[in-house]
Length: 405
Image (cartoon, rainbow, N blue to C red):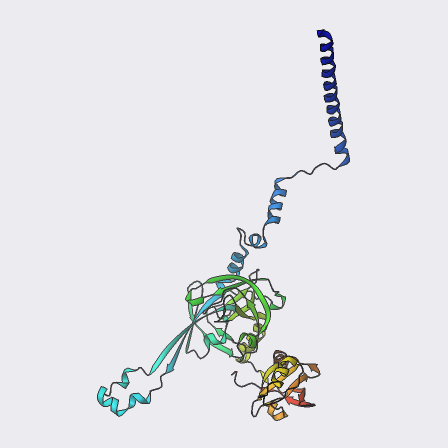
């Protein structure tokens, strides 16, 4: 009776063994077929691992690695950046109140003499050397009306500076120092190649902290001085978020290669993280004229103007208290004509809308200003204006601007 049971157990065992054997054979055959249907897996080397890590890095961490490009840029130009200290003596105006006989009788004759007759003002700015002979480029407002200019190099040497020329309209000045011919020179780049998003490195002496470097990007280009709130200038600024503070004025704005692309010149006191720089291409041309002639001649027409749009004109025209009706068009609205100016002599009137200059359409005050700035002194400009319901063609001969204000 036990043999039949043993026989059945043997048969079941053999069946399981056969099934396991078939499974092993199928697995082995599969492993032999798969490699023939696909390419061999690539081998990953140590170099490939480093490349993968570099590709996964963010642009900022990749740019600011252990060997920072900022360090290289600053080392390239840093020794050419200077500090500029100025002194200016202003006379005090004696208050007639202090000369009153009644007060002199009570306080004595020496009462009014206790006030010093003059006051000494000190200023601080930055600049950078653009020529081995000792030419320093800076802002006009840094050295304007200064009685004494002292230029201090990064290595600690100080020299008396002589202002060779100032241009208030573009806020640029050239200062000369006599320090031999072996001076470091800042490499000048081209602002025409600058793009929004490029690196921006500001170098200078903000708040008296010498040799300070801040990093940011180019926020925008061609920001007009009128938009910045400096209406007495004729500039299209480079805007950056690199920190610019008082004392940075006149210092260089660098690109990632350590080339000067602008001159730090203005900050907005009502904003944070916004600074402005004069494009270096503009500064090069102005510096050459200042070195040669000591000044720059700027043509002007003599109008105060406003960019006009149909919406702006409509708002004016629907106001029952508006003194005049304005054509609802695009152009430049003349708010005021300066007496005895080229515009006044040509017949321009308050309320005119300038439409064209020399056949080219004008749609903004900044555009008109650029047309005039690019013209020659004494050049006759053909100006088309809308006056009420009529258009007129006027000829205006430019003259030299005598006062920036």
